[in-house]
Image 1 (cartoon, rainbow, N blue to C red):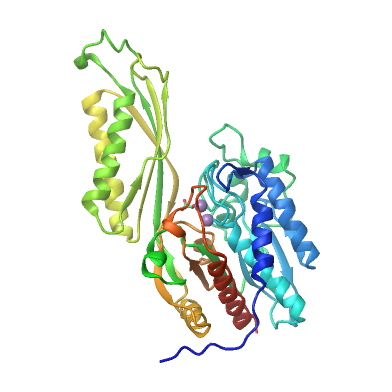
Image 2: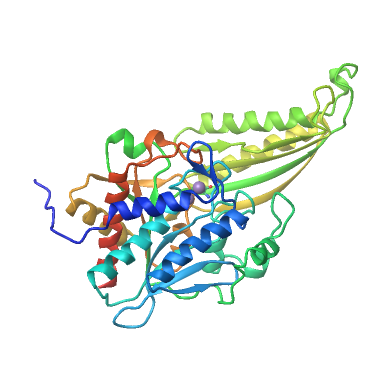
Length: 413
Ligand code: HGY
Ligand code: MN
Ligand code: MN
């Protein structure tokens, strides 16, 4: 069957690329990547740039108490907008597309409609949510979680990050401690465009991902206490080695993923030792474990396996270990009708399309709690992300943004 490619409104890919490049200049790091940790001066500069574009396009911009920014374009009638968006904060070694594409594609959709003089029945909105990454302040998707009422705004403002500063202080410092209550405006539907950040679409030569949901996420921080001692004189039987315990947990995380197989992933991304010296047995370790699975029961089994391992480590090594949950979100399924719509519109535009779950967390998984929500993926070259080498071709950026345009038009009437 030939695919019906309709003559239809298309976005301006060059303009989108220019905005992506301009935003990537803010907090740019070697290799073409970006470092704009949430609520940093670089995050502020990025926010100011995007808010400027929103205002130039005539959007009514509001900032809420956790710093979420929403730009609304009126429709023929009032009421909840059809919203798109994502995040512009990045990890320390971020790429220029993670989150940024979703926000700038939304801006491009608005400019395309303005230029074409198209008015929609329902209002449209473009948002960027505070601290999606969670790399500096846990949990991730913090701003959108507060937006949907999953976390109290005062609780979020009180969170202290990895550098000892609070969300509230840093938000005020960058001038984005807004007045608007969180969760306004209510949303009619939410569609987020994002790079896949994994290898699936590229491996299959597919251009558009109709994302069916997001896997469950579990982040735990372990604080390990040992006894510092001389690396040369202390017999092995007399050691209480926090460094060994941290390494053992990292190896168990890998064993769990290997033995569970399937979608199970496990990562120890951060380890710090004290006194962190070549000839001193560590008396302190701080590490994080990130485990994820598309299935909640399996994710819980992985968590229990790790908890049992840690208990045995305390018994056998004599170390003390305390744990703190940094983030815990169950798997989320997106709205089936909206996923169908994404798939149908991608197909009608002549793109190859396949359904898949998201391995990464996204703001959409939070908006799914309050309105029909879906995501559109475009391929990541080499499946690389959270890495300066993150790359998606201009053709694929354009394809994804055109699908977003028409999904939003379809929803907004
Ligand atoms: O961790 C994640 O999946 C997302 O990048 N915050
Ligand atoms: Mn992201
Ligand atoms: Mn990310």
